[in-house]
Length: 299
Ligand SMILES: Nc1ncnc2c1ncn2[C@@H]1O[C@H](COP(=O)(O)OP(=O)(O)OP(=O)(O)O)[C@@H](O)[C@H]1O
Image 1 (cartoon, rainbow, N blue to C red):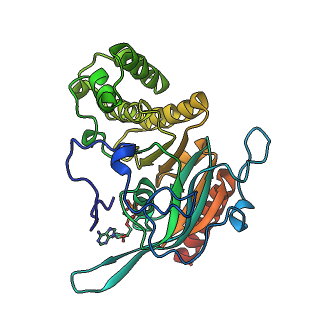
Image 2 (image 1 turned 180 degrees about the vertical axis):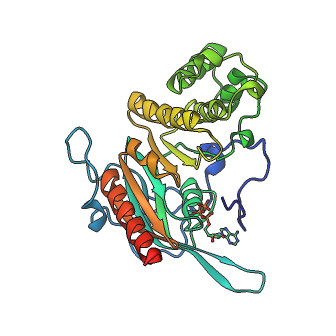
Image 3 (image 1 turned 90 degrees about the horizontal axis):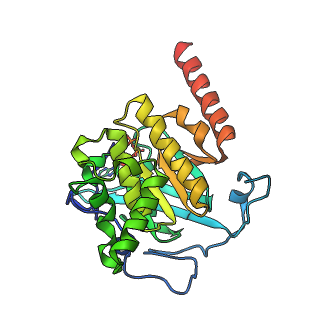
């Protein structure tokens, strides 16, 4: 995965992303849905339009058109090289993800998935367009060693609660709830270095949940995991969403088999969102694209 960025990805391995850290200046108060930094707004935000047409339903009810936890509207992102050349990375990316759902962001290597996720997390500012993401929001990194940093599971999950002025009892309750949600409560006192990769990922997710985040942004969490850990982490996220009700997750992956756990999906190619909607429909389209690509190279 491309990690480099010309802007503000924190380099400190002890850094844990929190909603406060993610707050950027220059909030645009004239657009109520805007949550963080906006540059060069050319098009007013609208909550209706073609993107609504293909959205999945939950419990057979049409999703409330206003009830989106994550939105990006015509987001573009370019970087300036040292020679002054402007390289476009994201082009006009729009998406809407209903609250409480589990969505995946897929696409070939280098198509811009991580860049878009970092923009949704507030780690990068779009060059153009704007985003709305419910808060608090948390970003979970691909490599859990970059954010599971305290000596024990309990201390690690409690780490982000220091700034909330909670009693010991309240802290313990919140840590227990978050660890239970990801199936890791039995590991409360375990030293973190004795955990498997998948267990560390779940602890990292609990570290996000303990702060009662509304949006989880998850960047290729299963890259370094074997198949059983991979499925374990996905199921933990699914279960969390089911039990918390109002948490929304966007999961970046390049593994098509993970799609069966998703409510919806966004598919990108070459810096653009090319498909966006119900998971099985997107899955079928990706399979069809793959088949026609294979046919083309075999003919
Ligand atoms: N700071 C940077 N400088 C130069 N190019 C960059 C920078 N950040 C990203 N890119 C380029 O932008 C494109 C998108 O990168 P990104 O990491 O978002 O893709 P991705 O879809 O997440 O890829 P992967 O699936 O391989 O992780 C890539 O071509 C990458 O090389």
